[in-house]
Image 1 (cartoon, rainbow, N blue to C red):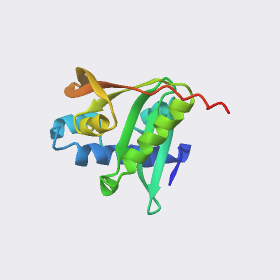
Image 2 (image 1 turned 180 degrees about the horizontal axis):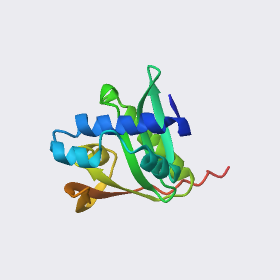
Image 3 (image 1 turned 45 degrees about the horizontal axis):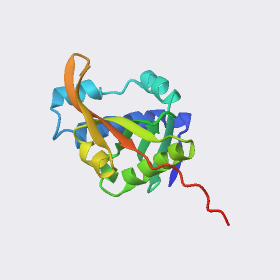
Image 4 (image 1 turned 90 degrees about the vertical axis):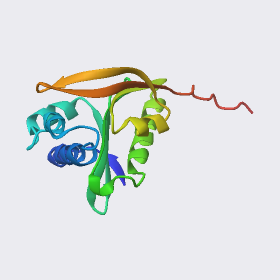
Length: 161
């Protein structure tokens, strides 16, 4: 089930993000990079502030939060994270396409994101292409990621009878 984010989800999303980084991204980033990217425990006030400025969709499965996507109305996909317990089940794809559909219905013709190395193949399967390699400094540690873009098809005009 996909639903809108609730303020009461902040702690669960922060924990999901942290678990995702430390478990799913650990084959692409070392322990120091993961700790800088997703400190334990998560900084909940920072999460509240960040999520307040984004539209967020939450996926639930087996009565648990399985993942989430957060985006801006300008086409920026800011966050897309899955719980390690629910990865590789198509839930991320469902979340992504729901966000894309919402953006297309609001007239957005191009999406963009900054994808981690672990997310790179996912976004490529969704039609994104690399714009540039980026090196991000977080808490004194460098992480590599890729800026990506995707052009969306123009909406079709209704057929005239």
